[in-house]
Amino acid sequence: MKKFGKFMLASVMSVLLVLPAFAACGGNKKPDDDPPDDPPVGEFIDYVANLKLDLSSNTKKQEVTVKQFIDGDTTHFDPVKNSTLTSYNASDFADTYGYIKARYLAVNTPESTGDVEKWGKTASNFTHDKLDGATIIVESDDDKWNMDSNNRYTLWIWYAPKGVEAKAENFRNLNVELLQNGYGLAQNTATNRYGEQYAMPALNQAKEHKLKIYSNEHDENYYEGEAIQVTLKKLRCHIDEYVTKVVRVEGVVTTQMDNNVYIEDYDAETGLYFGIVIFYGFTPTPTLRTALTIGNRVSVCGTVSYSDGFGYQINGVTNNPFHPENTDNTVVVKDQDGNPVTGTGGFPELNIKDVAMGTRNIAFPVVDEDGNETEEQVPIKYGEAVLNTTATFSNLKVVDLYTTKNSENNTGAISITCQQLDASGNPIKDENGKAVEIVVRTTPLYVDGALVSQEIFRNKIITAKGIIEKFDGEYQLKVHVFDYITIIG
Image 1 (tube, rainbow, N blue to C red):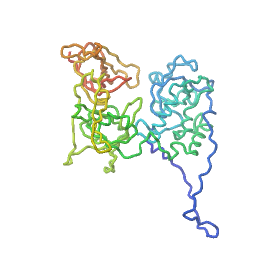
Image 2: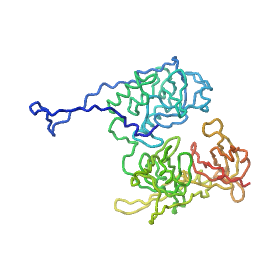
Image 3: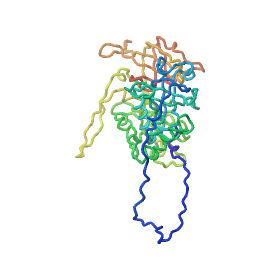
Image 4: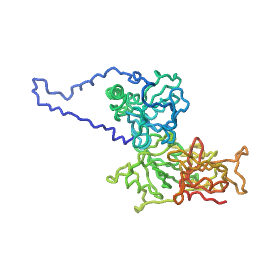
């Protein structure tokens, strides 16, 4: 995916030179004349229905299931090894650790995971809805599996909708369907297996009928208003209300991981830190990177988004060095004397029982129609309140270990299942008398160039610092620095 600016397609416009006409020839048009009608559009053709899957062709084919939805034109799949529709060859996907990062051929949908662009989230939802519960086959463009420069397989995506028998004649081509419904622009659309007969006509038809990105319609999943000023506390406790909206929040940058920074803000009323992930992209300007330095208090402007793979985050943050006055810049907060405001990372001591199963009622002021102020009590899971913030867990007894293998980015990452001990050295238990557990999940950790083995933590008591995250519905502590784990016994 690229920036939405790429969607302002360059087109060659011929300039019609109109010579002055004499009034007697009717060449002068009155200002109040009716504008000409739009040219009529042709009959809408379902190119997707006309395109059929040929299971006997010489292309590569593999039945798959969804591993992770990414956006409108990118999905990660797991091969179905015992498929009755296609054969499976483990060596085909050995270089990608057994799964398939698919980049859809012929179509380019707007961004929805990094920068949030108009129609991006809607296109992503369209792909999710079509593939959810479907039987799926991925197909190469020729007789081999091809990859792009980002190690993604370039593929045609076929699906038999949920509840429909998985016969060849029932499969629909999602690449062409995205184009046909106006969710994408050309991406080498004519120069491929189905381009000339199906993909290009579907694209041109969407343009002719002014569908989605070729229209002036409102996209309900894209916020086009002014930035909403909101506290991290309110954002965290009402997060679903702000998805797709542009917000401005303040917080201290506490840590950096991959292409993200984490900001948080202490709330004295509740005694909690509230925070969120800021995705700053793959090519941030130097001024943006400087602003997002750990310890800076920053004012961030961006779009709140949610995806299955990344959770809630703020995207589309910028800092234009040539236009520092831009109101959408993300900047360092300054005091009345013009000095940068700094802070320290929270890393407060938390109890794993609170994080795993606690709840809080958090008060917000509400003004009624008569101007009277009351309080709104918002019930929220403790873990949700402190999600994406720093935390410290002490006196953790290691009870289980697992090291990830055969993963593209996470080989060597360690999952450390822990129980927290009370002052008497006994595990903290829930209301049913069962010891409460939490996973400390590391990235691959290195010391002096050597990958840290899980054995260093076996049967130990540790203290761990990291970020509260959520995986498969369970809260965990993400640790990306070896020094953030201290072995104390």
